[in-house]
Image 1 (cartoon, rainbow, N blue to C red):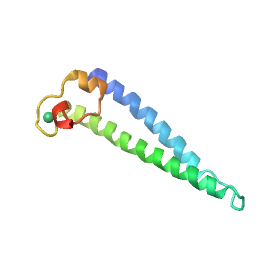
Image 2: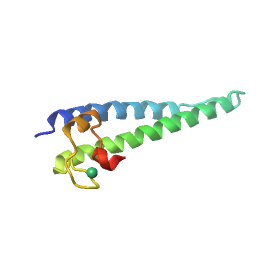
Image 3: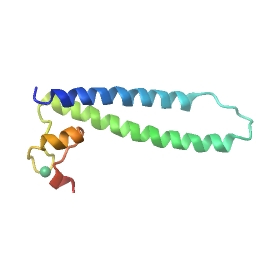
Length: 104
Ligand SMILES: [Zn+2]
């Protein structure tokens, strides 16, 4: 496997992101006081949590997609021009789907 190291990196990231998402979910589903004056503040926090949650979900999807591509052998190809994405770029950004030219 030419992308063993990157696959390991992605697996580790997958784990980190999954853990983060789980802890965010825990925060969101945590019971909150109904009749306290802190409700507005709580709601604001929820929005922040949502934003982080969404970001995490998007990253998670990208990492999973990258692992899928490694599995099916299409990893490292630019989705636009079909050229090989340089290894250095993949190491810096393992979930990259485009070469530097096409990403711009
Ligand atoms: Zn390209």
